[in-house]
Amino acid sequence: MKKLEDSLTLQLLRARESAMTFFRPVLLKAGFTEQQWRVLRVLNDHEELEAKQLAHLCCILSPSLTRIVNRFVEEKMIIRKRSHEDQRITLLSLTEEAKALVKEFRPNVDAGYKQIVDKLGEDKVKQLSQLLKEVIDISASGK
Image (cartoon, rainbow, N blue to C red; front, side, top):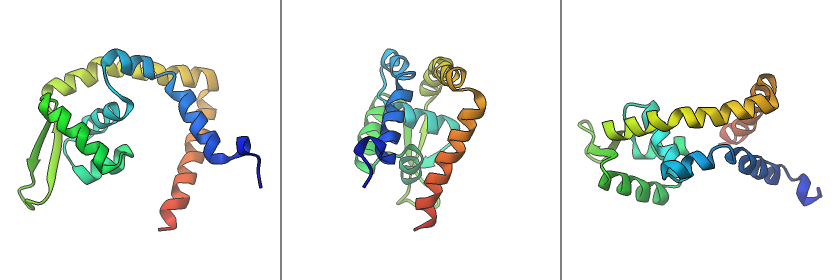
């Protein structure tokens, strides 16, 4: 059995925490948690999504997503409506105010990505991204 510090899952968690140090100050300044920002980012990149799709794309469990969406609906950042085709489906989209917030803070988040690329190099970041996609595909193909 491998030593704990050599565990792939622990290394992935540590790498995530390390990467987040480039983004947490921006999110703190914006007043968002990491999960809240993911919801805004994903909805900003998609016109409209079902709640289930949003949870999947954001890697957020449904109960947590429900709390975030409810808060953002109250704050008039997310519009929630029923699908015309299927009334059981809830569709979510950003308000213009939320889109403006994403646009305001996106350059700072992008600057965090640039710092990572500057430190690792573009080739290593691409290689790392490809390897992570392969790890993700392992579980996706096993279902």
